Image (tube, rainbow, N blue to C red; front, side):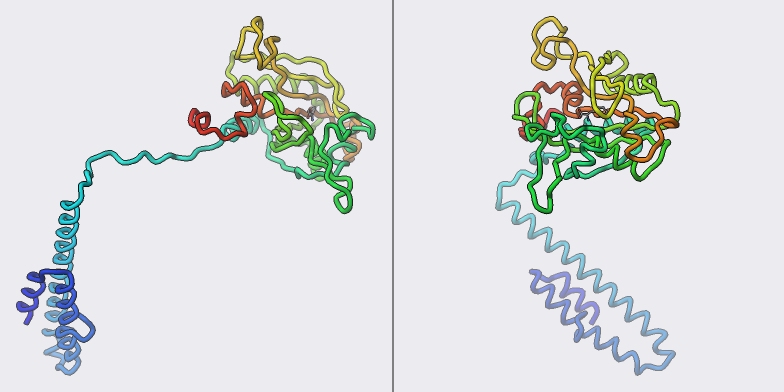
Length: 337
Ligand code: PHE
């Protein structure tokens, strides 16, 4: 019977015939299955011989079945391919791989450098209470930054006193409320201002806040850390310039410029307005009032803080002259990164 079924299987002309042979022989009610069921009535001696033999026959027939099945399937496929005109040797369609947004690429580089300088990650909310965006930062009630002209205010009612944060400096206050010095944090994120969109302005952009508070932190620490950061980002040849400035929450305050890479500083350049330098961030020594507001004694501790413009740095880093390029999702631009 084994030889008979082996013939039936190997001669099956179609996959239907093959399947029928399988059911007849190996199926639940198949000839072989029934035979194997009878084993239970055999004596132990008989079982010793018949058992392994039965299993071997079963396995041989199954092997025969599967190899026939494969043969029939590849024959069917070859027949199908012969009918159609598909050239399997042609190269396939390229699969477009996704990748990180250029701003994310730039921001990852910046936070990687900062973390090498010892800064740890901190985050704060984008919808913020006025006291964290302004009051605790020593920004008085009538400061122009609090004007509806500049800050996006969130409705009245339950949301009264809420704004879309106009800078990441809110994280300074929130972090110092909960953590005492020494501390060294970086806080990247979105900020919001009432600005019309043009080549260098957007109502939503990104900043990375930095804050370092310990004993004896000075302007010299700020200068050396920021210089190291800029050289890390733009290479050793990068030139950095510190100018005196004013922020209510730092004293003294500085603005930090980086040498423009788009021009020689003489011919008019849209990025730096022909000055040869582009302002990248505001910074300074944390104002004693800010430390006092969060219960840190300015007689014992001092700190520096900075808030850098991610888009500006990314534009210089990636050679993009128009900030709108970051938000318009033009694939012709994305493909270059
Ligand atoms: N928050 C300031 C801005 O958005 C930048 C800044 C941060 C300045 C920290 C000083 C210290 O312009």
